[in-house]
Image (cartoon, rainbow, N blue to C red; front, side, top):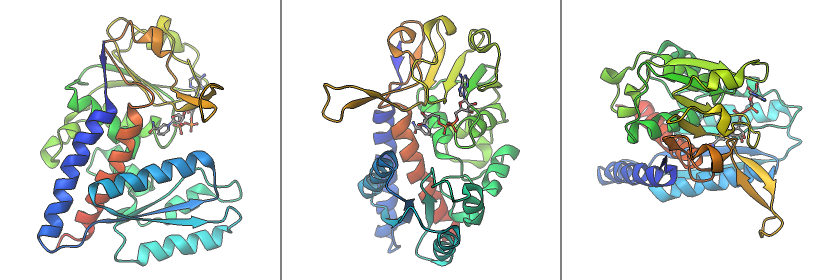
Length: 303
Ligand code: NAD
């Protein structure tokens, strides 16, 4: 079994990004600039946002946090979004999800300028991705595709089972893997991945185990510890664990530890490649956000 070391690959990509950003400043250009809107103080969201800001600083991308109260009205939040759309010094921005219940997430996402939508969630970018055209791709699926590419794991003709149908992971992941690659139009090797036969499973899927047993690659994004057990995995399969779950661990300082959706201990004995949690998909997701920010900068400052 080979561990798909997202932390290591993310560090490699960040070093490449640092070089690209340094080249911009060496040529007298300003550095790319990301903004992150966070509404409220959800502890997991605060941690994610801090990690994103640190990652930006690590590669030389300027980053601002716009922290808003959790009782902000939808109208006021939309005004913040419009302000960022109109600000020429902001190349890209994200609105950290989830948002409080009184705010309609879809309305907020639709208000983001698609050219600054570095989370790749705007219907315009999702549509381009669905068409198999170059777009700003949702960070987690983009990171997984990059991880597969950097370990030279081919997807052509493979059966991929994606468990979870969310707009941020499951659906875009399935779209990327089923489409014909657009390598000719893209600089990155990961864009060559695709041409897989994809099955998307979800909470109403009846024969999850049988479907998983026919998979060459299984990608799990559910949010349930030990959802994927060893009896569901064919020997030699590739397993990508997207889940991030906090389970109580009284002996630790934080009182919890992070686990994925896969029964790692037993599944890792059967598969050929597997991502750990933490240190697998998570660092790749943040790195994709940095890549998307640089992509938006290039698109918006092309002349
Ligand atoms: P979500 O909560 O929006 O959706 C969960 C999906 O799981 C749904 O589509 C549902 O149909 C499916 N599901 C629920 N129970 C199921 C079952 N028993 N069998 C099969 N499918 C089932 O999910 P999300 O936002 O995609 O997040 C999923 C997990 O991935 C969470 O743990 C989240 O924290 C994590 N996540 C990690 C990263 C990362 O960078 N590592 C990024 C995004 C999400």
